[in-house]
Image (cartoon, rainbow, N blue to C red; front, top):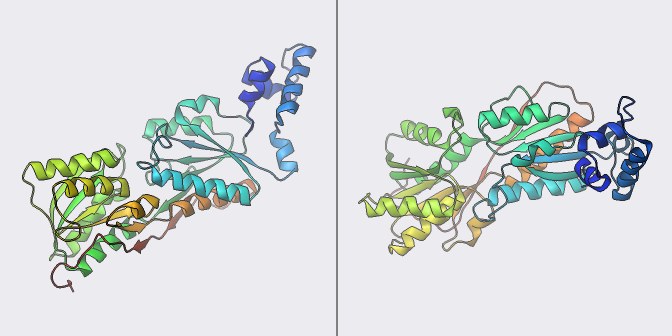
Length: 337
């Protein structure tokens, strides 16, 4: 997607000068030669102003994401799947989209029609995103939205995801459960955290016991390290391990296998995400599918509705997860009633 910055670099002027020239700002003080150079650059690159896009019913949007989201496909399989959903929906709906890392937020194109914000940003970064995108329609895709009144919110039902995984362990007779999770963004409300619903589930089912809470950074390496340290420090082997996402589960699985702990022979494991990484393990992970690709598609649909004039109150749209049975959960004693 061609941006204002691309036109500015081609014409040898500032992004602001391009924006004002294309808008026909009469107060802009530039030579006629410079003005022609700007319009020539825009035409050569195929840049369309917001007005022209609306006349042609083609919208141009940006997806603002964390800098690290697309550096490692295994650790960030969730976001790669979300991205695929966004890109597919944009193609189907005749929209153009670009992806903008947070560190390039200052380069956000003023002529965009809308933005999708994806990822759990700290509050201060969300404030910057809102300030820089105040002139366009916005949709938030993620679990920790500090400003739910500012934009439509696309997420999956966290409690349902945790309950599905725990119900599955319970139905297979598992009583002693170890929790392994990634750290949440500072300031995330407790009721948006998976560990909160894990504890809530245990409080409703007294026959089950949480034997530990391991938390660290996200990613395969972190999951491996957390599991290695638990075993090295004499941590008891649980009936099952409940893991907050698939990459952490992959790391934990590696650590267990290195210590010759069989999954599911000695311990079972269930995780959350349901992206492609869960199918690549041996044994294949049992995981809760949170419809990562569907989240991306839903965000595009919600934004398109706003762009077409929907003025209904801001809303939260939650997708309901489903269990994908792999081979990492065995039967441990009698099923719990």
